[in-house]
Amino acid sequence: MFDLPTESSADKRNYRHFRQKLIEEGFLMMQYSLYVKVCPSREAAKLAEKRISAISPRLGVVQSLMVTEKQYQSMHFLSGNPSRDTLNSAERTIII
Image (cartoon, rainbow, N blue to C red; front, side, top):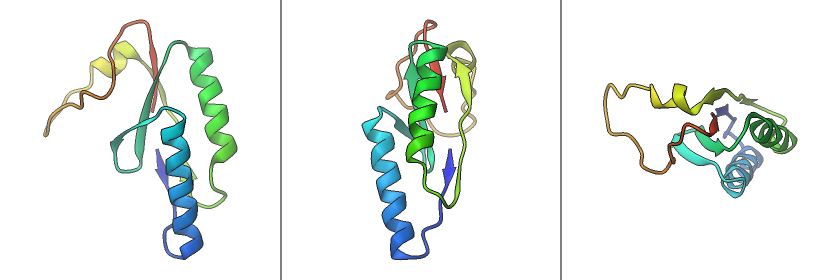
């Protein structure tokens, strides 16, 4: 999850660069500024978190939340439809 400034041209460039790096790391956009990635283990999720930390812009807020696949599957959609982009398996951990 992230909230980055986009007021100056440098801010916008940093936003685009960070978003592109997330996609290169295998993250999928769930909502604006909310990206998810399925990881095979907690260790893999921690490694992904470390890589994202290294590319996070200096300004703004970047947060992570790790949930198990079972927890993710228990999400309720109150409006809209679930995305089919994220694979579901009880053997994986999702980093949000």
